[in-house]
Image (cartoon, rainbow, N blue to C red):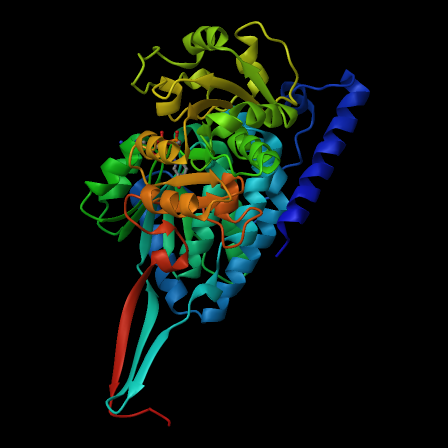
Length: 489
Ligand code: NAD
């Protein structure tokens, strides 16, 4: 495994090389558009068969065949498949990040490299399984983790390659086959990821098409996959629409839905750390990740200092008037106070300077986040913006902050963050929020194992309760009982 610090070093090196190359051609401060036009990493060669199918029936049939083949292979092959997937993705993390960045037009190239490496490194493999045994006068009972068969998985545009990497490792480690229906807007980068994963599996001695996909995915093919008789379980990662559709399908659905993570900062927090970490977390891949901080809620007595720290760490503050103007661009229709709204796709995942240029502010790429003081019922607080613009709400004390955080998280129970040294406040927020992820005194992404302890998953199933999914989420529990024998003591 490579460490998170090493991931940062790799990304830093890539960015320095890119910027040096660009400086020669274009002067000192290249925009991402220039980087993208001239620095595409080289494409990998695909040597093994084609795991992308014309329709759902063909893909499911191929996956089913691969599942049966895997069942006849030694368990060791599963471990080898997982380690080959990790290797191939590490080697191709840049090209996958680049393809996703260009195709979707969302996020930051360097952060997408981080997300790929993080999922390749820290998604648990077969080592997570430890069977349970009971022994006694009545003999030995063993509980083991078995695969389901073919899983149907639907993946988002916001973390397209990284979700496929994490899902594939987890599902294959558990002995399943999987048919993916990626987001149509991330088809190219998803297909490339899946072809590389297929290569890795075949090179490890595993069956072709154990991980496969519909080559031209649509919402209709996603629906078809959800209802296919040979698909045993669904795993969906996306907004509320796909979660509802999966849960209505009649199949078991591991459902990872939207979030609106609040970050509460009280007067006991280390403000230097809190301000820096909120900027890092809220701007990670331009705020398109479901765990990214979507609103800050600060106790009034420290709010000004917190904002100063955030500005020192790459945030750019705008005032209420400027926000009013910007709202016309970033919302499809500007909602009234107290309501959330639909964000304008044109600006989802764009860099902060692209948003700022809408209101005539000309700054560089180094601005990671826009910061703005707002009222507690502002639409930007209530909406999952997925843009690097963070509303900050002032409250009188931590209790008021926690109450507001609970309200604006809308009961998604996804992710919440608190910066505090007060144990009572930390405990109360942990209990009240009841979220799959609660991060104390760190950026939200520490909650998916980036700079924080624990494994990574980009499929965080809050509605159905699995939390951060892993190979155990994709397994059936089976019990085997031997009556009266095999207790050895
Ligand atoms: P999206 O909901 O638009 O699309 C997700 C996937 O679902 C796509 O493959 C899409 O084609 C499919 N889909 C959408 N509606 C469908 C329907 N009615 N029937 C069948 N398939 C359907 O989401 P997106 O914009 O790609 O991703 C962003 C959203 O996903 C955000 O809300 C974010 O919070 C959420 N998300 C959650 C997690 C998590 O782990 N909980 C992870 C990533 C993204």
